[in-house]
Figure 1 (tube, rainbow, N blue to C red):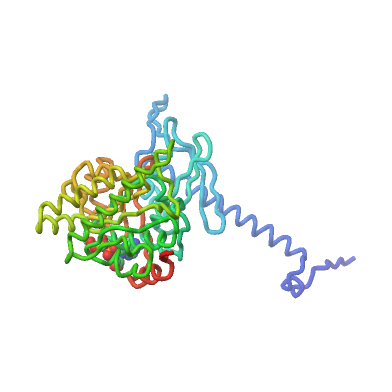
Figure 2: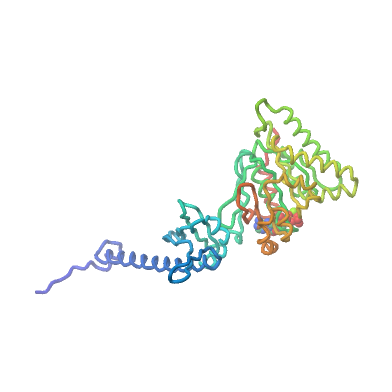
Length: 405
Ligand SMILES: Nc1ncnc2c1ncn2[C@@H]1O[C@H](COP(=O)(O)OP(=O)(O)OP(=O)(O)O)[C@@H](O)[C@H]1O
Ligand SMILES: [Mg+2]
């Protein structure tokens, strides 16, 4: 007897019907996917061991059969929508930082551009592999404006792809150094564009270049608190004295049982921008030593006493040498420190000995790449956001800059 098997027609299959082949095809596809995943996982496991051994994140263990090498144990990989992650168990006594310290080299051995390490539980960490280099790719700043002083502004994107932020309400003055064309001003444009609209922030200060402050701020509530250019140097001293007087007023009027001012619309957080401050000091010294002393002592007061009165200083300099920025004591007051491209010695001067090993590489970094140190944070390199050309900064300030009420 002839048995006729009733296969569904191919037409029906291609129309998406659920025939016998559909089930088989789905199973084969799943099997292929699992085999592919297992192959990739095996490959990653082998490379991970080699990479950890290569950078020295390993332990040597004496066993009867001889010396064996132990590396952070590879757990399981997960590849989802093009994102590859895997888990790993740290070595006894190890910390996630041991892996982060070698992140670029580990990633390169695994065939990726970067990696991020997050602690999940106990000694287990999750490693996320990055296909693109977060420092190499430009970081455009979305049309982002903050509405309050305690909102976080974006400082940049770190090597592990994480966006780093900072709230000016945190009591930290900012020091920014970098050679010509390294990206200090562009970073400041990005920062100021984010805070210019907040009703409880006032952007004040001195800028001999007249690009960061000044004309771009015409018509805003901030403009009256900004001095620019080199033609009238006493005007810079007068502005800094005015800021000190405002600070003193706030300190004198401090409410009982309070030791710091919380920014409000009537007592806004004053962000004192000092663009190319060593240049201002040099120009003042050349003209009149007393004027330079007046400027130095005002800045010294702002950085040492300003935090309580909701004053934050953002000082920019090509090199943060003590005598160029008002002395070692003044420099010590800056908690948040950013170095764009600078020679290795300048990097160590501002960030300490830990930064020395990065010196040669950082001395050749592209514009916009900075080294950041802050209390309670591991030092990290970041890519500062970039608004685009200068006109875009002017447009954003004109559009969003807070108007005088
Ligand atoms: N974050 C960035 N991303 C991409 N390009 C950048 C970035 N920052 C700066 N640049 C490029 O570098 C150029 C110089 O930057 P910027 O004017 O900020 O340097 P600077 O450190 O202020 O230099 P100077 O000491 O001369 O004032 C910019 O015009 C821009 O082309
Ligand atoms: Mg500049």
